[in-house]
Image (cartoon, rainbow, N blue to C red; front, side, top):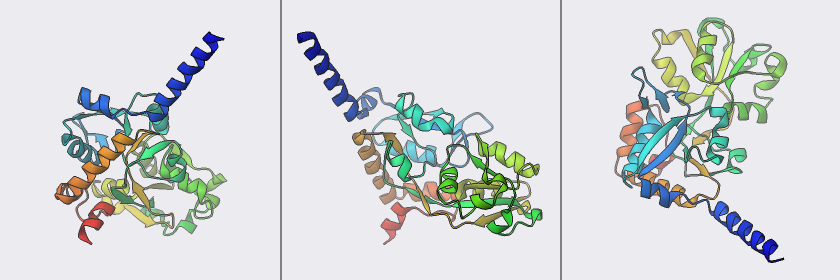
Length: 271
């Protein structure tokens, strides 16, 4: 009987510890935090030609954690497995154009949003696809595990119902998706506007691509932590507030997006 009670007590203690899931103290002690990202997601966080992880989110994360004397370690992951990596403790955070949505809110803690985003349709201009309706019976590429795929499934009347077989072609990365688009293996891509605008702008012939706005709801990027890990999300929120007030966030936005950005944090500062 004593053994059973003892086992029950130990299980209860473990459950309490797991539900708290507070890793901030150990992160500060070790002076490092592991951030999971899709290393092909330009310009948010990606590996450049020199093999270095760089990007908008990389700059923002470095600016936030510098305040706490914590060094971010950027760990490339399979984006479709991002929440699994978080739960398995192989990463501490998901910080790479990670959109807030109701499904994700059930399994991760989100910080406050720091950047706005839209889902857009990218096509080859000479395909003469000038509206979503013209994607009827056409092939659509979407990244697996992306917010675009989530929106496509949640709002089928906007686009999913008219594409070929009502089923998109799934990609591990948008780099491969753009290769297939340029090679005409797919007719269009549903993609984050931040990625689409940056990618197209840096092509040899940007005019070869067309970017179409959609009626999908506006999205907001935030940082994802393990469910119950409130202290680290609070620390990141304070860090985001500081760099939005001192002008550092605005400089980072302009560095990567020029004038093509919208941040709810900066909007509040300008009110």
